[in-house]
Every structure is written in structure tokens, then in C-alpha cells.
Image 1 (cartoon, rainbow, N blue to C red):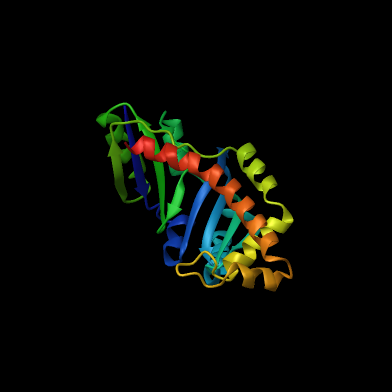
Image 2 (cartoon, rainbow, N blue to C red; image 1 turned 60 degrees about the horizontal axis):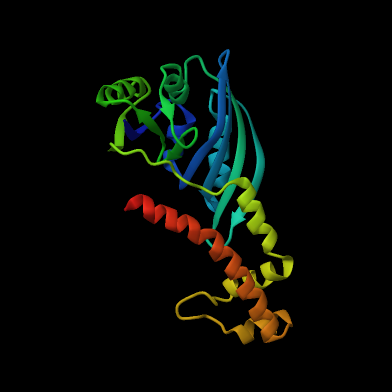
Length: 236
């Protein structure tokens, strides 16, 4: 068995037009029936490009409508994250739908967008399958083989339940101290502020600030280190 990532510039589609912006995206879900396409797209985009990116998608000739389901700032990096529900009409299969129709198995989702290209991780039986997948995608535009591997490795990511559990451990007070510490550069090297300064800004005792911060750090690190260990074990 092989795994491979293939990217294609889908000419004449709004995805290729996004090459002009600082944006990346992931299709969370999609379906195609009777020439009608419905897709759920998660975007990460430079704040200054957001309106133009959404307008590029909305104004494309194939797009029927775009609904912004959520939008929020990514703290401290002048970027926005947004989830879009896209309806459009196509007179041919999209790259993903063609791969599915021909029996290929995508891994880890419904595809990504980066630098104006759609990319797909595929599970393949052999090199002949790889050649066939490339041939199918070439119907849409230039194709690049990003990587090919003879080993199968499933990407282990936290479940929704696990995320919810760790979020519940970060109480409003702990979140307040974490946000203030990050904003004040407490985690920078060298530190941009002291624990006493953070406590003074929040109007609480230094011991109280320390307790909230250490408890929050403990829960966050316990959550993430298990996945760091899994990733390292898979690389060995």
C-alpha cells in the first residue's frame, strides 16, 4: 500500500483565484448531487485579505451562495479564522468527487487549499493507482505529487470529547490569568513581565495568580504531551 499527497490547480475555479491572497483552508465536509455542490470550508486568512477572499468565493460564476457560520480573530497574529458554508453549481465533478467516483480513498478529510491549489491525501494500492489519480486530476489543471510513502500512518488527533474536557478545566479565572500572561509576554524568552506584575494588573495576590497559571498549564500540558509522544513514536 502507498499513501500520497497530490495537489492540483483547479483552473477556472475560485480555489485557484485564492493564490493571490495569504490564505489556507480545509474542507470539513462536501457533497455533490445533480450538479449541486455543498461544502463546509474552514479558512485561516490574513486579516487584511479576509473580505477579498470571501468576495472572491461569493462572486465566482459557479457559486450560488456563501454563508459565514463563524469568524474569530487568532490572537496576536493579525489573522482570522472563519467557517463558510458554500453552495455552488458545477457541470462536472470537482476533483474530490471525481476521485471518490473512481474509487480512491482520501485520508484525513475532504482536501485542503493552499497557494491556490487543492491537495488530497490518498490511500493507494500501487504505483499504477498513483498514475491513474494523477491522470484524473490533470483534467482540472497542473498536478504535483507532494510526497509518496510506502508506509501507512494514520494521523492521531484529539476527539471532540477530549477537546471539550480540557476546555472545561480552564475556568474563567484561569483563562483570565492565561490571557494576561500571554499578552504581557510572560511566556517569552526572556520574560516580558513577572508574575507579580501580572497579579498586580489583575488585582489579585501573586499566590492566586501562580495557582491559576500552574493549574491551567498542568491540564494543557497533560493533554498535549500524549499526542506529542504519539507523533514521536510514529516518526521512529
